[in-house]
Image (cartoon, rainbow, N blue to C red; front, side, top):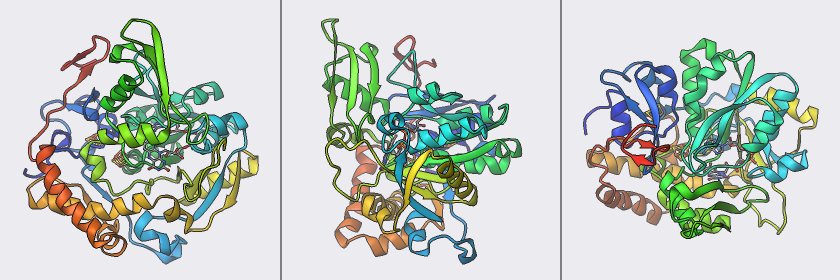
Length: 428
Ligand SMILES: Cc1cc2nc3c(=O)[nH]c(=O)nc-3n(C[C@H](O)[C@H](O)[C@H](O)COP(=O)(O)OP(=O)(O)OC[C@H]3O[C@@H](n4cnc5c(N)ncnc54)[C@H](O)[C@@H]3O)c2cc1C
Ligand code: SF4
Ligand code: SF4
């Protein structure tokens, strides 16, 4: 497939995670659009996307620094999970946030803490588009009301880094919330833009096993009685309980109000995960290794009926340590220290994916298909130490099959969707 020379190559050769940082760094030549079958993707003008945008792109390459014992990271977790200084488990002390949040509302509680203490004047994150509720947009929330509207993980494409200019131009610092690939993009962009870096209060990553394309949401709505995408009035994927129900409301085939709900096992397990783009299968970082703080589900035990939610929180940097300590002292979160083994106990599937990625990416390269470059991310050792022979064989041969069924050997041009005109093939 040849080398990756620019952002168009990244997008067309199945490497794009949809973070949006390229559009922030090169707004004159790159614009993010919705591609219903893939995700948020960059439209690139001729000659654009070969400089800083490519340098910051997490789709093409990601890396970790060498392990340095002096920095205090937990050695036993480094290979599989990246830099971790502390682990905590708990929930937002505010009952409304705890219930509304996807897990224990940690991302929202930390964001609100920063606003209420005056540390930050905004939170750059993701919410449903008001005009097209089955799509997402990047928002900078500035109040409790704004944050509450945008609680809950949206298992659909989002590109929060396309709004980084709002952090750079902000009238104070901002909190950033995104997926691991978004946090990695922010981290690289901070290295390129000191004006951005000085305005980041803290970066928070939510764990992510893969972001399904918009077609996943449309399929889920169909199964809940809303046959046309333009009939979808609201979509919630999780939260309001733990893990909470996926809820779709809209218009039925007869024009009458309809909708329904699905358990998380059904919405994610049976529908949404089938729509993850290939880049998510070749993703090594599902827990936000470049973020200051990462949050996910402590799935290590059975969840009793009616449980309002709990979060597993990883502190990864000194900036994150200071922020979380201040948040705990303010009473925003109720937390207790968690033992390191609770991370693999909670998210073993993500560790296995990290190992499988090594085999998947080598299978791709053998067939001439582009693969992300990971430096010091421990995928090879995880492949050898944490995967059974059967899992290794599946990763390798499964990829050979997918290269052909998903046509990964071919370039796939970005197909923009004009939501207002409800038309595929144009820009919104
Ligand atoms: C695509 C996807 C895959 C996930 N996979 C896993 C997994 O494998 N393991 C696991 O433990 N948890 C997974 N989650 C859930 C999420 O990581 C946890 O629920 C996390 O603990 C956040 O919960 P919270 O209560 O702290 O968040 P909340 O307080 O509810 O806040 C959620 C925050 O995430 C932001 N957000 C929502 N959707 C997106 C998006 N698509 N992209 C970027 N930001 C978004 C919101 O704007 C909000 O700031 C996934 C979520 C998504 C969106
Ligand atoms: S991964 Fe991010 S930076 Fe790279 S092409 Fe996609 S949107 Fe642009
Ligand atoms: S699986 Fe990885 S690449 Fe895909 S959305 Fe999640 S963090 Fe990004």
